[in-house]
Length: 241
Length: 241
Ligand SMILES: Nc1ncnc2c1ncn2[C@@H]1O[C@H](COP(=O)(O)OP(=O)(O)O)[C@@H](O)[C@H]1O
Ligand SMILES: Nc1ncnc2c1ncn2[C@@H]1O[C@H](COP(=O)(O)OP(=O)(O)O)[C@@H](O)[C@H]1O
Ligand SMILES: [Mg+2]
Ligand SMILES: [Mg+2]
Picture 1 (cartoon, rainbow over the protein chains, first blue to last red):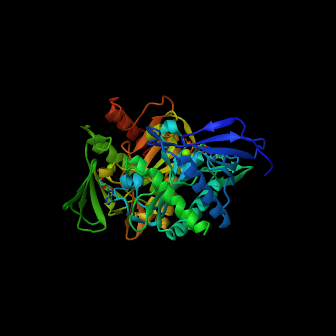
Picture 2: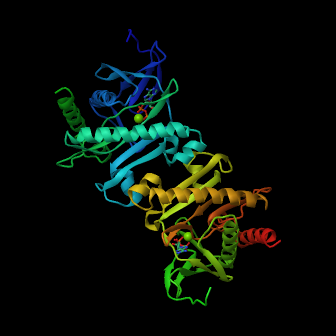
Picture 3: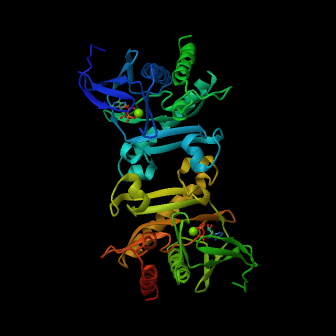
């Protein structure tokens, strides 16, 4: 990668900032320490969260690339920043679930922790003003948020990521309960974008069922930094070992 | 149909009562005058509503049968009652939409009346205690509410009913905005069940855009009986003419 510089900021989200570089194909992402939940209603600064999520996301994207799942990830710049391929984000958040938790527990009236007979995908319209409402593929087609062909690619990638990460994390004694993915278009191709971190996944310790993810923040349980660090340590133990 | 009698009631819902007959394949449905909205929070008795919905549903089911869409409908008994095939109801309500209205307007932030580029199907888990939450085909498969093969049949019937009724109603100067269907199993076969009436559809006069459906009750507009009678009159004008 030839020397690139962090140029003007093009977007500041709740967890990251996105900057242009000299290369229109490459964006520069900076992970913030801000934690938010319930569509931004609850907020706090958590020391080192940005560093931990940047490094955890990089490890997941690198592992997925080795297993044949390409993403926007290009390279780590430093502890808090990474270079990624520039995406035109598709405004559909894709949630994959293996175990009932969070909003699904309320929706279907089943206790948290119930295993699902098959993986469940859910789609949400990425729109903070509307509160990220749940949608389905008919809405996506009618509103032209993505084509049916793009949705077929997105669903296949989401289910593949789920299988790969579920198995990999099981080896680290982590249950992959659920996670959220975002996708975007890069030169017409659908690519996995955004982040894969304890902010966007539910991770439970397989033996103790301890929560190692953002639910600690949503539910005022404390120990968020320690939990995220535990995830990073287990990933590094395996991937650098 | 040999002489059948109304035996014990097996279910009383918000709008209808279901009774057994001597024939286990045949149920006896009585339409009530009760109107309810917002998951039963709002209630009233509307004179003749049961009569109008019974007769309107019968006409729709008969017209659909002629177009090759079978349903549970067997025959009218009298003004308020019909015989139907006994179904094991699949707990998934299927909504088909052609024009943005009601919950979809709120969900996607588009004004009521916006035409949809393609028909939209939505699925709701039929569970009053949970408030009929929106679900998708992954939930249905994982919870085993219906098999993927049954869902393929259900989606095909819902889209076909939509095309048939949209065109038929356009000839009566009625816009078919959206409607809800229920399906059930009769000897292993997926059949259209429940009712098709102004309680379960949104009908707008094509010229005046006047609402001719239950939204008049939901929104305290008055004139519910007159609107339902207008629908019945237009249907009878065409189907008996
Ligand atoms: N490769 C990429 N190219 C362009 N935008 C991206 C890329 N990856 C992620 N984004 C977007 O960057 C924004 C910032 O992330 P984040 O702070 O998580 O935002 P949000 O508050 O919307 O969750 C998000 O809108 C996300 O979709
Ligand atoms: N052919 C049928 N066989 C068995 N049950 C049916 C049939 N058609 C409709 N039902 C069910 O009859 C019940 C009564 O209808 P309704 O009063 O509309 O109930 P609800 O309050 O659940 O909307 C509903 O649960 C509906 O699913
Ligand atoms: Mg985000
Ligand atoms: Mg009903």
